Amino acid sequence: MSTFFDELKWRGFLDAVTNDDMPAFLDARRRTIYVGFDPTADSLHLGSLIPVMALAHAQRHGHRPVVLIGGGTGLIGDPSGKATERTLLTVEQTAANALAIRAQLSNFFDLSSTEKGMVVNNADWLVPLNLVEFLRDVGKHFSVNEMMKRDSVRTRLEERDQGITYTEFTYMLLQAYDFLHLYRHHDCEIQMGGSDQWGNILSGKELIRRMLGGQGEGITFPLLMTSSGKKFGKTEEGAVWLDAKRTSPYQMYQYWLQTADQDVVRYLKLFTFLPEDAITQLAETVSTRPELREAQRVLAAECTGVVHGKPAVQSVEGASRMLFGEGNAAPSADVLEVLSREIPVTVLTRTELEAPISLLDVLVRAKIADSKGSGRKLIAGGGLYLNNVRQTDERKALTSADLLWPDAALIRSGKKSYYLLLVR
Image 1 (cartoon, rainbow, N blue to C red):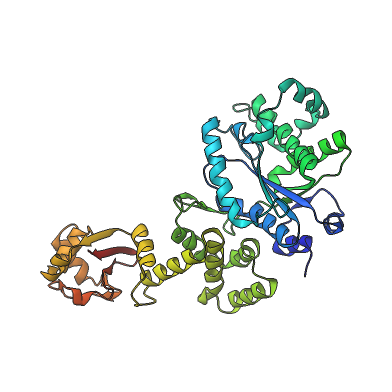
Image 2: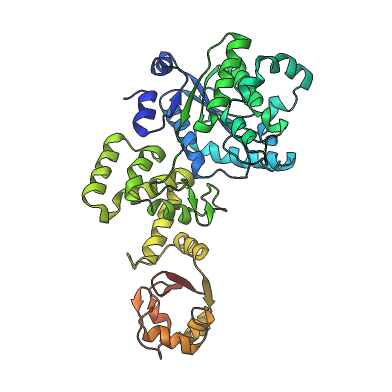
C-alpha cells in the first residue's frame, strides 16, 4: 500500500509543501492534519471537495483528520483570491452556516471518537479572545512588511479603487492562531489547503515555531480548472453545491456525466476513492472507446454517491434511463420523485384518463403546446414522443392502455424537453 504522500502525489493533490522531507515527516508517526472551511454559505460546493477528499485520504492512511469550521474567521472574511471585500455575515448567519457545513462534512469522515477524527469550530477560541492580549502575545510575531508582500494583500493594495480593510488585513493572524491553537491543544502538526492559502499556512508554521518552538508543516493543493479554461465546479447557472436543496443529486450526476474526455481521468483521481489500477483501466477505455463514456458514468456514480449516498445514485440513474430511452421498466417511487423534481409535471385524474382525453388536450394542459394547432404541427413534424415512442396521430386519445408505467408517462418535445404526466 502506498503512503499518504504517495497517494496525494499520484492523484494530483500536491501543489507545494513546506518541508522537502514531507514524505518522511508523514511516515514517522500518525499525524493530526487539519483543513479549514469558512462558512460563507450554508453549503460547500464541488470546489471544496479537493481538500475534503485529501483529508479523507489522510484518515484512510491512518492519520487523524481535524475539520475546522471557521465560525470565527468567517466573521472576518478571507481576502485570499478575492478582488473585493466579502460582504460580512451576521453572527447568526455565520453560526447557522457553520452548523449546516458541519453536517455535510461529517459524512466524509469516521468521527466515532476524537481519536479517529474531529470537527471543531474556531469561534470557540477566537470569539473570546482579548484584543490587547492577542496583539501583545501574537501580533508582535508578525512583520507588517512581510504581511504586505503576501499575494492576497499586495494584489488588493495595487487596486487603488478597492484596497484592503484592516479587518481583512488581520485575517492571516487569526488563521495562524488557529494552527497554533490546534497544535497546542490537539497535537495538530499539518495544515492543508488550496494554493491561495500558502501565505496563511506559512504564517501559522512560523507562529508555532516562534511561540512554542514547535514544528508545524503545510501542504497545498493546485487550483483546478477544466480543460476549456473554466473554473471547476461552475456551470452557467452558478456553482454546483453539495446541498441537495441547492443542487439536486440528479443535477450533480449530470454535471459529472458531462465531463470532457480530457478531464475525466484527472477527476477520477481527485474525486473518487477508486484504486489506481481501476482508474488506469478506465483511462484506457477513454483512449480506445471514448464514445462509451464509461469513465464519465463511473465518475458520476462514484462522486454523487460520496456526497449523497448510493440510494440516491440508484434513483438518479433510473431517472436518467427513463429520460434518455435506455429502459422501459416501470420506475420506482424514488425514480418518479427524482423526475418530478427535475422536469415539469402535469397531473391527470383517473376519471379524465378513462374519458378518454385527447393527446392534443394533454399537450395544451401541460403547456407543451400553446394551442391545439401548434400541437398538431409538433406531431406532424415528428417532434412528439410518448414514453420515448414517436407519436404520429394528431387524433389520438390518451387512455390507461398508453401508460407503460402504472401511474405515469413521459412526454418529450423535440430532443431535450421532457414532461412528466402523473395520474392520480
